[in-house]
Image: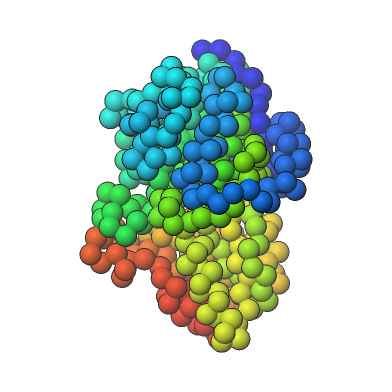
Length: 366
């Protein structure tokens, strides 16, 4: 083992939360965010997997210590996110691993502990559980247990999550809440191609272990203009996607597209919805959510994961603690059901736009 360099940063608003949860931070990447955030408009149309591929090319090109590895990544991966990497950077920096998620995560810990950027891919989030011990008991605690003498903060674990229309039990799960319970980890979920590129580069350069969940439903479905250049978006900083006055909606990843549709339907019925993309689940932007709820007096949280123990419960509890006197109705949660993810019954399991619209009406009319 060797001491890794202090690298990257957390977002300005999230720095205090980061310190409390044992994160490391510096000013270098924050300065870079400030320079780049004004210049992310424009570019050419890309879908989400192509934007991620572009980010990986940039990460490997700008840092000779960066490595990409996982099952089948050398030929592009099952979703083609790593296409062209091995041809450009060689098999010493982009390589396949055995079918062993625990081994992938353990190797990432060792590689990052030597001061490298370990960009590991778990082929599906449903398969991340064998790696849980290495992620939770090694990566998340490495810096803490050594009194900051050593760290493996250069780890980014990419993994596709969520519904895809035909994935069934083992290719559709949303396990983000498991990792949100672990101090020392960051959890990030993008909603679109331009967000995916900027957030992934920020995760790779952040000095803390990050789990980067990619909404596989949007790999080819989501298309927007993505700048060609190198840019990062701040972690732990939510975005108000749509301003409103009657109710606040909070979500992340692919679910935001469903929530946007629900907001449009509600607007036609005279209900003004404010929609917030959390982006980073840990450490999350409490301030942005609380400011919005204090304005609207109502909150609805929606995610694909089962409702019980989902991260929506943490958001709801925090809002009740800090915005109680401003609430006009109970916090609503529209989430997946407390069952294994189904195959033919997927439409009944998912938190659809109609379910969200019904919850919006019930909350506003409470």
